Image 1 (cartoon, rainbow, N blue to C red):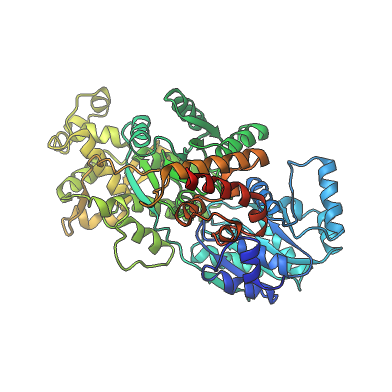
Image 2: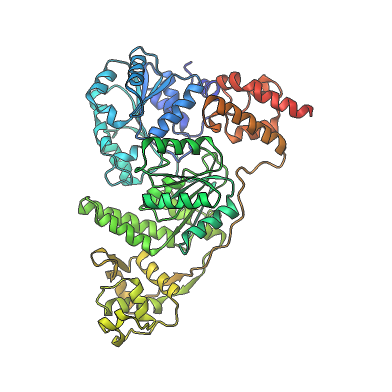
Length: 598
């Protein structure tokens, strides 16, 4: 087969490409290089999988994600594609078997980890065969200023030097302009065609709220909106992931922790539960999720503030890959900012790198505090303006109330200045509200003119004032003084009463309407839907793969609507290629026929 459209239909079971998939594939087939930015779930894999079946030789996919390798190879093999992977999970015998297959020209695609690729033995092996193309997945990992830098990626310039005639495609879902330029430079792709498919995921609803009682807030979110759904909960620390996972189990949820400190076997076991079972919640650090193809993740919850908008976008992008409604829900507080800044300050990066990280954190905090459409702000960060408000984020659904915070801001700034910018938010609030604490009397702060001038606001209101002043750059956190708040140059006009400032009112968000796992079309018979899901589950268990590898929910819905009662009609369904028609068609047609006869 030499036609991309023929392969798309007969192998993958789709009837048409999403733009710009067809342009990327044609470019790669011609032997040209490409840089592809496409949102999670946008179909990046097809952009190199189809050229791999057209061009002579074996396509080599370089990926840092062991989970993605296993997942994609399982799915490709079920389609009749000769695919394999080489990574640290294989035994010596398995590795040698795959290397023999590679040398004998028996593979269409080989997935390989970057650290293995750069070994002399691997390079020698690849130079002895015909390589169809190189695909560099998660290409943003090459950026030292990015959110997920991996040193092994810096060695991938070898591709251009050792294989100058082999086309290369670099793919990522997340990269701002600076990161894109770094990918092009470090991978020597300056002459590559660039395809930017857009960052918007309109089916994801973005919601951000203040952290009061994290566990109870999460529990309310799960009970009222996602009681029986698969989802991911992200936490900043390994200890917290284990604590939250254990607590969720006590609440009756099927939850598992996932972080780099767990053994490889345990991580693989928990990940397998997540992929193959339903209604599983993974509580994880950012070590989890990259490359996971599970389409029916209905929510991603953050219990701590991500370090960057890039991280937030990529992590929330793991929800709703099937295009069905999904939630990106997050709670945060000023303590998150202090903790993240402390981590950055203690890192081994250069001063320039630390400044870049601080800039990214400020942008993330700014996204939390805005009063306008969150999707507009998110897309604008990636250079993709959205003309109209989205209508599918918390600030669109319930526009936040604001208040004139000019006087309160001046009091807060003055208090920090009068106490020599040496104290954290709790002590400053005590001074403003005229508290009688040992610390106030120890430093004589009861004699300051700012003592007691803020008793018109309660503790939570003052906490909001300080948080928003930090978020907007009027104040910063001095990590050398254990979280002391200090004034920034930007605050001068505010202190002089030359400008005013509006603050966001902190109110408890209303509970949003409950989302079902899949919003079924009104014409769908629920009993048939459940029967088809049971048929899919049986096939998945027999083959040892996740249910979505058999068919996505969207294909099951199409079965319910079109009711194909013979193999010819079944072959017309989206996602039904020749191999799936042969393997699964009779079973599903029988379920539909039994339903119609009942």
